[in-house]
Amino acid sequence: QVQLVESGGGLVQAGGSLRLSCAASGRTDSDYTMAWFRQAPGKEREFVTSITWTIGSTSYADSVKGRFTVSRDNAKNTVYLQMNSLKPEDTAVYYCAARRVWITSYHYWGQGTQVTVSS
Image 1 (cartoon, rainbow, N blue to C red):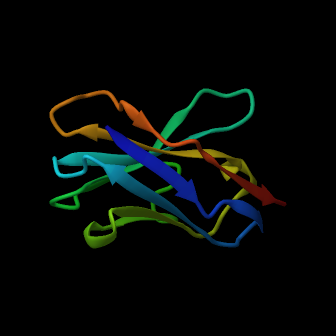
Image 2: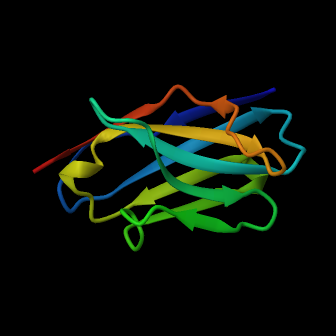
Image 3: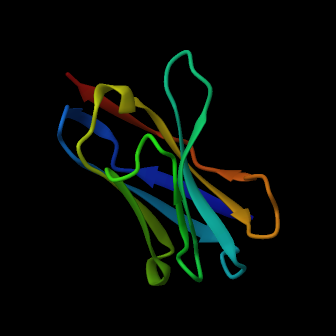
C-alpha cells in the first residue's frame, strides 16, 4: 500500500506561481510512476504530468508544457509540481497518483488539493 498526501494548493492571481507537494509513504521501495492529474468543476479528470521514481523520466500534457515542471526528491519520498504562469483555466483540484511502472492504470490516489487562479 502507498499513501499519498498533497499540499500546497491555494488561491493565486493569473500569471502567478504555486508549488504542490505529494508526500508518499508506505511501500515505496518498488519502482513507481508518479503523476499529477486535475479535475475542474463539471469536467473530467485529466492528466497533467508524470515522473518515474528511479530514472526521473517525465511526461507533460500539452496544456502545461513550458509552464509546469515535475520533480522528485527520492530521499524525502516527495514529488513536486512547480506551476508558473498560471491561468484561470488551471483552476482545478489537483491529485497526486502512483502506479507500478509495469501497470498501466493509477491505483493509488491522494485526497486532492484545490488550486484557484483568479483573473
